Length: 234
Image 1 (cartoon, rainbow, N blue to C red):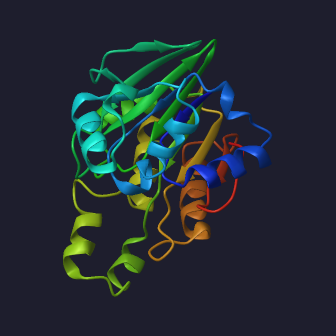
Image 2: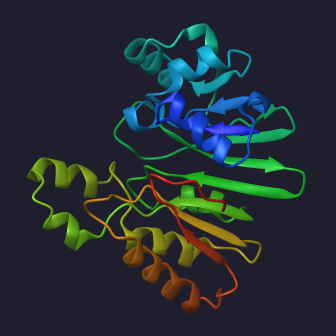
């Protein structure tokens, strides 16, 4: 198994893994996308619990997480964006994404004949992100906010501008744009993730993406909307 990020407590992660009948002692590695709290706050304790699982991150993310969260920098194996590397039976290719932190990445993960795309915290639906999505059989893609709900959220204007900005988060429509332009015939399963609980609603993200898939003749794609508080199988 591979784990992407650890933004919940180690105790909660272990509880959810048990619910999903997963033994995390089978982890061959932990992939870190970036250094924001909601992606790495449980990493220090998890590494103490499972020290045999190396943590993979690029150099800037390694430095930030080690300094800010007290994770032993000896836990990390550094990689270079765009350069594939092997972790157990997996080939992992990290790719750069636009987000407001130090050198964030998404991942394309290959295992036997299946390709998995993982892209969250993406401020702009760049072609460079889409070309990686086009490789995927299975994909997890950010669908963070509804622009109207974001504007009416009562959040400070600078926060709204950050979220909607080019280094913030994808809206439902921007996620749909990526899928409309880059979903390949091989895409079979799609999960929408990183939904804001205050500035989005699962039914809005789901209906927008269903309409998009229908418009490109891809009603065969299995679509799920992921929540923050429950286990789900893509």
